Amino acid sequence: MKKPAQRATKPGAGRSRRTNALVLCGLALFTVYSVAPVWWLLVSVTKNQRDLLHSNGLWFGDGFHLVDNLRQVFRYNDGIFFRWMLNSLLYAGVGALVCTVIAISAGYALSRFQFFGRGVALGAVIGSFLIPYAMLTLPLYLLFSRIGLVNSVWAVLIPSFVSPFSVYLAKVYVDGAIPVELIEAARIDGAGEVRIFLQIVLRMMTTGGATVFLLAFVQNWNQFFLPLTMLRGEEQWTLSLGLFAWNAKRDEAEIDLSALVLTGSLLSIVPLAVFMVAMQRYWRTGVTLGSLK
Image (cartoon, rainbow, N blue to C red; front, top):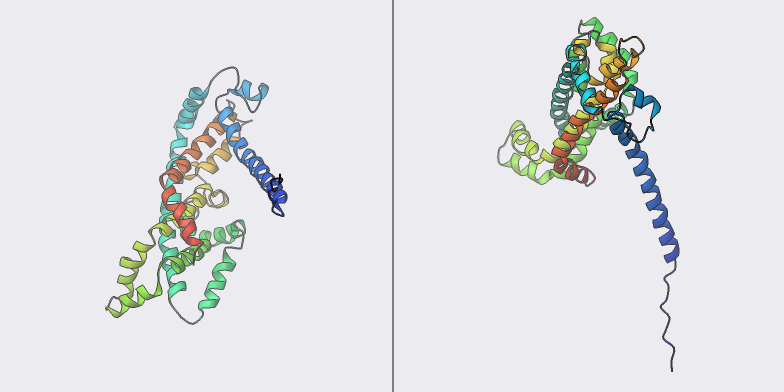
C-alpha cells in the first residue's frame, strides 16, 4: 500500500506565525498601556482623599464617593467649573468651525489653482506645521499685547482660526475627492468660482471637512500654553487651565483638591468622547478618503 503523501509546508509559514504572534503581543501591550490611565482615572474619581492615599491605585477603595466628588466640583467656587467648560466649548467650537472654512478654502486653492508661488506657498504650509506650537506662544503674546487683545476671548480665538496642518489635510482631501473634470465642466457651463466652491466643493467635502473640524476641535480643546499666556482672570480660563490651577493650589486651599482635580479631569473627557462617537461615521471615512489620491 502506498503511504499517503505528506502535505507540503510552505516555506516561511513558521516565521509568519511567529510574526503574527509578536504583532498580537505588541498590540495587546499597547492596548494595556493606553487603557490603564483611563482605568486609573475611573477608579480614582470614586475615592475620597483617604482612599486615594491608602488604597490600591488600580482598584476601588472602601467607599463609593463619586456623587460627593461631583457635587464638590459643581459647587466649588460658585460653580466656576461650568464657566470653564462653556469657555472651552466656545474656544474649541468657534475656533474649529472658522479654521475648517479657512482650511478648505486654502486647500482647494492650493490643489486646483495654478498661480505664481504655489510651490513656495505649499512648502511654507508644510514647514509651518512642523514648528512646535509652544514656540509661537511668546511671539503671539507680544503681538496681541501691542494691539490690546491680551486677556480677551479674541486672544485665544484668533490664533485657533489658522492651522497649517488643517490646510494641508484639506488639500489632500480635495486631491482625492474632487475630480478636475467636474470643476472644468462647471466652468464650461458658466459657473463662477464662488458658486463652484459653495455648491460643489463644500458639498463634496462634507466628510473631509468633518474630519478637519474634529481634529481642530480636539486640538483647541486640549490647548494649554496659549490660554496660560493670554488669559489672566479665571472667568475666561479653559478647563485645562482651570484644572491646572486647582492642582497647583492644593496645598493652599482649605480643602484638599485632589479628588476635585481627578473628577474634573474625567468630566473634561466626556464632551470629547460624545463628540467622537457622534461624528465617527465622518472621521472614519474621512481618514480613508484622505489616504487616497
